Amino acid sequence: MSDHELYMRRCFQLALQGKGFVAPNPLVGSVIVHDHKIIGEGYHMKYGEAHAEVNAVKSVADQSLLQASTLYVNLEPCAHHGKTPPCADLIVANKIPRVVIGCVDSFSEVAGKGIAKLRAAGIDVTVGVLEKESRELNARFFTFHEKKRPYVILKWAQSSDGFIDITRQKNQPHSKGIVWITEPTTKTLVHQWRHEEAAIMVGWKTVANDNPNLTCREIVGKNPVRIVIDADLRLDYNAFHLGDRKAKTIVLTAKNVTGDENLQFISPADFSVNSILSKLWQLNLQSVIVEGGRTTLQHFMDSKTWNEARILTGQKKLTDGSTAPNIEGLTTASYYFGNDHVHILKNG
Image (cartoon, rainbow, N blue to C red; front, side, top):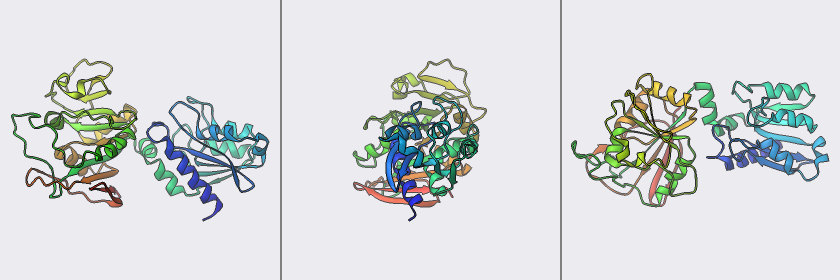
């Protein structure tokens, strides 16, 4: 492994500490090296606060060493004024002579401008170190800006005999509540996943059957925005947990209904998957976990508009009911969380 790769991987480690706190900004870590020794580190800790390069520069005890150092960062330094000043200007002002970058930032306000500014100042810039890994680290950010839609994660739990729910009686909404398939402790993993994404989505039938909270209450973290697909507005949301205002809820419906700040009713152009995702993009929601039932999950699979599938298989058997989806993708992880099996697929 080259020195460039070694320090870039350290940038990745730092960047991941901001997961769940920086969106819609990207995950960014930065390392400053002088004479083959790390003298400064930093990462973007929270949306609206200082970027990774700022925190790395501030952490250097002897600021005079910056003029003979190399700054590593997994994403191109910004060149525009947003909630914070441009990081490219900070690098130039501190006369850091060398910068090594993982990948170019495709966000239109940056998109090569930061690199151009650094090079115009005479800084030696290397781009593309662990580029594939750098882009994967910020797959949500790149999907959002390049495809104009959120990063989509499909998630479900299935029994050991291949069912995701019991057979429900049509005229008995939420009569049996949630049927737990995985172990109670697995909720901490699922709630951690929720905390790391901008939104969580279900169909109206899941609300009627399960009356879910869709929060990350098992951990310390921020709740995702709760999204419900209910074109005909079949449900009175004040009668369900999603109407509790403990987290923001958006109901996608064709009906014209007045809500409030934490219970909103919004109409997409239509109820195709692409139209729904376009509406979430307009709402600046960078990622979404789809935790709906078989019908909602199947719509996303049929449209091929998904990035990840996270499948939890418990030890419990249901014998009969709604069969689990059959999905194909590239396996990227397979492990056990307690007695529950976790299988993660990527689309392509």
